Length: 500
Image (cartoon, rainbow, N blue to C red; front, side, top):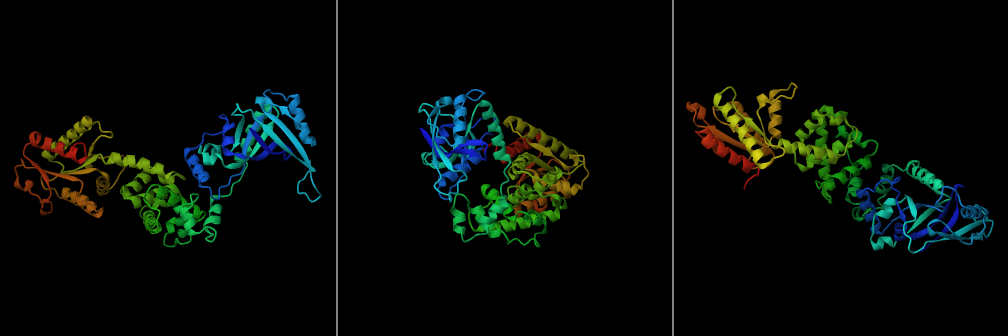
């Protein structure tokens, strides 16, 4: 196996062989040094692999490799002679170095005074590798490119390389670390906003259909183009700070995230739905002024996600964010916020809110029965989180609050409301009405509630059921242990889908 290229000192420092070779060859004869290189990111590998497979407009700068010509910490006479011949412009006939590496070089003179080369000669070199040898070189830059794909079509693609030749092991170790640092940390890349401006603002070179279908871009780029410059910040004043400095980047990241989460699609309708959702998000900042402290784009993406998905009450999410001061975090990953809150919500949806009259003996007995049955079900089915029973007069989080607000919050997030119709308490009817209205607003045919009436009470007025609830199924009983307990257990297991 042979590598050929131009041989010279780069900026007077490093001796380099620069040329072209198939990516598969460079994959086979090099590896990433574990003490220097980071572990390749799987998402980044997939992204680079897709880009390489695409074929059109594919370009990368050269892969940077490093080789040591002597296994010792000192420079051998042969290596010193080779380096001196390159400096002097003298051909190097042939030399065998560490790991069986063989190098030879030739020198060509410039042809005239108008030659753009800065020296009067240039050198080409041939580096020969024994066929039985594989890994010889260390990867300093381009590890993701070389690791991204093992497909034949990609391996056959020719790519530029730069092989840095070190005189000894000390130089190899020092140069590897120094160059890796310089390559990765001394560069100042263009901002994403500037790059996007070059693409999104040039509709002639990058037409809409091209953005939609090209694997390097996709529908999020198209949506960002369509919406950029078409967001009226006077109508959405609370979102102005998100759009001020990097509007294209902000829009692209929002669309990428929302399409990935499948709440927006690859279609023209996505822009309209997104505008509606950010309009509602703008209103949330007015309802909860504390949100105005936030410049967290990840939090805004999560707000828009819940507006679009309807998988959770948006008020519950905002309340959770504010109670945990998450709006004060400068940056956060929207997927992480959603994953954590979904777990919180899953726990809350195992919560049973009991609406009941207080200060009466039988409702207190009923509540203790509900607690015991919920505990038995959780243990029997190994529920994690377990079913949790709450009543508003026992709820205390150490903070003061309006009792009505707390009732609304608990009922909004609970999985099931159990309404005790015994004694015909007006507050119980109000709470049941709230849950029924919430279900109707969400387009549900039936509210998540279970109603019961203890007909063993003596006073007929305590058995009265209002006309608006008479047509709704109720558990009616006269004997608590023999009738209420088994019926309650069966209904709870059915509601939480623990039995057919």
